[in-house]
Image (cartoon, rainbow, N blue to C red; front, side, top):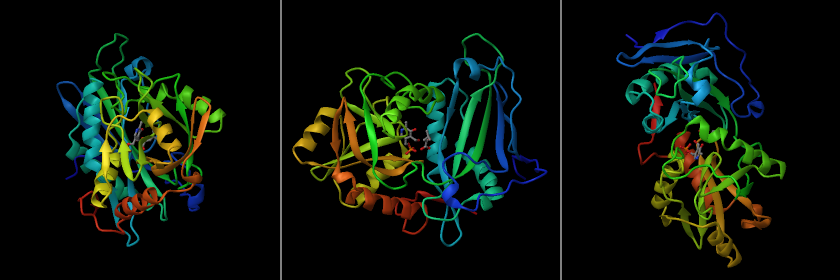
Amino acid sequence: MSKFTFIPADKHKAKQTDTSKLGFGKLFTDYMLTARYTQGEGWHDMRIEPYGPFAMDPASMVFHYGQEMFEGLKAYRAADGRTLLFRPLDNFKRMNQSGERMAMAQLDPELMLEGLVELIRREEAWIPIGEGTSLYIRPTMIATDAALGVHASKTYLFFIILSPVGAYYANGFNPIKIYVEDEYVRAVRGGTGFTKCGGNYAASILAGNVAESKGYTQVLWLDGVERKYVEEVGAMNMFFVIDGELVTPPLRGSILPGITRDSVIKLAEHMGYRVTQRLISIQEVYDAHAAGKLDEAFGTGTAAVISPVGELNWDGNIITINDMKNGPIAVALYERLTGIQYGRLDDPFGWVYEVK
Ligand code: PLP
Ligand code: COI
């Protein structure tokens, strides 16, 4: 007996069969999962119901104080037809870390994974087939108390929506250009940088607009105190290959502990590369480039997968990395990671979760 009540839809949407037109996060499937939380009662009214709008009180706390957080993971269609999730429990566990910082309700990760699996089973036909395509999964929690005092809400709405997607960046697996942001900051230690709260992203949009107007895809954030050390890119963690060694900023509370970041560290070590998590200043990146030692740079993320960075602009100083070409280490990691995610390669780490 399912813990999630199923409410059938009257009609179903037409699917986009041309996967080149999917884009990212523009189309949504027929069903969503919803669950309500009330302090003292826990999670209740758990449903899989037709995708559609919520009726909400205008005083709902999420609208005023942004008590909100979300996650992002994907379901992949393997060539043999299996439906695979990648490290799904880690996303629900990270949601609890975000939730703790945002003073929100805790989830039962196993229960929500059970619900997600039921939802995916119903929506399997929406998982696109083809290289680089997947069904993006967006679990979200919002504060629903209708009250204007600044306090933790006592009620929450949790939901999961699904979106068939292609590549996050319009140009697919090709180097992107990144603008090093030295005016605005994204996060400081002690703040919410390590969470996936909506506010982090709202605060990043202005800098993103400026970067885009200059022809850059995203911004690279520097640390909020000294504006010296590399933090992360808008929707990705960063790796630099310096003299053959992979260097990535450490988790100090101001960047997202990316699941792709963790996977890439483990895969790279498994493949024999040296990986170091340490502070790296933007000056060091530029010095390495000047010395001919900056072999590659790339970002990692669920939406972005592995994305080579071919150009950096720091205060007007532009450097081109690896001749604006995909580097061999980024390519090898991309092949290995996506090979595991799409079930083409062995999964020595036990990351893949098959939806049966
Ligand atoms: N950093 C930020 C700010 C992100 O939004 C994301 C995407 O989720 C990442 C890093 C990469 O995290 P993950 O690999 O868990 O998707
Ligand atoms: C993800 O990679 O899942 C993200 O959440 C990035 C998103 C902000 C588009």
